[in-house]
Length: 379
Ligand SMILES: Cc1cc2nc3c(=O)[nH]c(=O)nc-3n(C[C@H](O)[C@H](O)[C@H](O)COP(=O)(O)OP(=O)(O)OC[C@H]3O[C@@H](n4cnc5c(N)ncnc54)[C@H](O)[C@@H]3O)c2cc1C
Image (cartoon, rainbow, N blue to C red; front, side, top):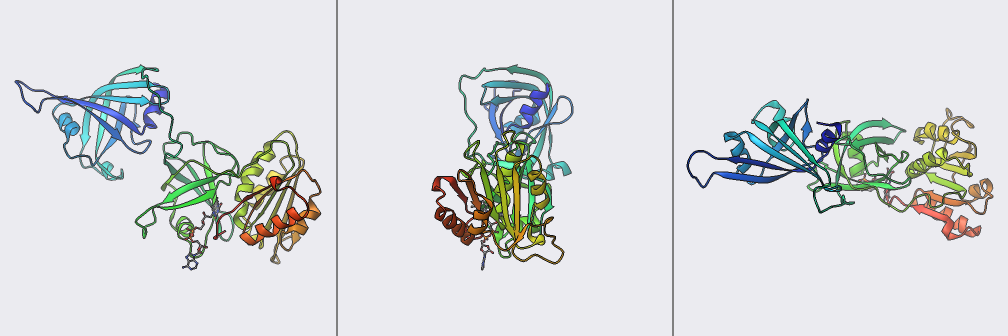
């Protein structure tokens, strides 16, 4: 198998399986069968050279395939690349693991089927029909890192469960996720802004623990690395809308998450357009991603940082941890930013947003230059 063929199989969420049984004479039970098998992307895995394993989930209990394989181990598998029309046909012999510890380790598996592959035929562009990936499709993500960022914010870093590329996102967009919280019969759905730079390898969200919040408490208290969750495609229209205009990123509390993602993009830009990162936090203990933001602001010239602490602790140092005391408000922005062409990106609690918007509009900043994101009442 080539590397590309292994990747094709390891990222498939569907394939077709052919099996059959015939003995002497005639019998209505003899014949060939073609069935569909589906699962989470990655449910089929190539193990070693020329062998693959897939779980057999609860089906219609007719055992057409499994019954055939018990009597005749010869099997044909067909993988389809629905975007290119490519077909991958494998033939070999199957063996069934009915009840070992390995079966118990695969959620939902009744049995594991191993196929020793004997022959491979790849037919590029063979299928006349093409399908696009469903933008709304649910993706399985694996938590690979859980990083405490401040007294009440923790970052969660995910990669695709199958290790493949993730749908791309724009800085400022958010990730809709679904969590299996034990007390709830339905998955709990929430959205979290992506707080890392655009990446197809990993998604990072940074979540504030709400003392009575369902999802945020579950994430903080019960999610451990290795846990699998479901997500949909990153979404949302809060993004850097112009490519050359001066940009002012203004946030308070956990509202800094989409701003940090945008800062990653702006810090890597070559043009050197002016950028201001203005953030309000209570104190140094409630200031997530502080070091990352300072480093990004120093990555190139033209990025100014202003952090305001409303109640600094004695150990918080002016000039190192924060740049001023008090809240971020219209007056502070008016003092810091004189550029009439700047675009403002705002995210924070409702009162903070209302105050800033009124202040900016009062200064004659056109509404088209003010972009806002709201986290809902909890924010
Ligand atoms: C576009 C978007 C982006 C977002 N990005 C982020 C982000 O980057 N980081 C982040 O932390 N959040 C973000 N949020 C908010 C996030 O989606 C959740 O709303 C938040 O985590 C709270 O969800 P929860 O399930 O923990 O709380 P919920 O269970 O939904 O509760 C909501 C609020 O009600 C309060 N509450 C619940 N039960 C009670 C009760 N019995 N009595 C009194 N109060 C109660 C909770 O304390 C909480 O404040 C974003 C939201 C949106 C819409």
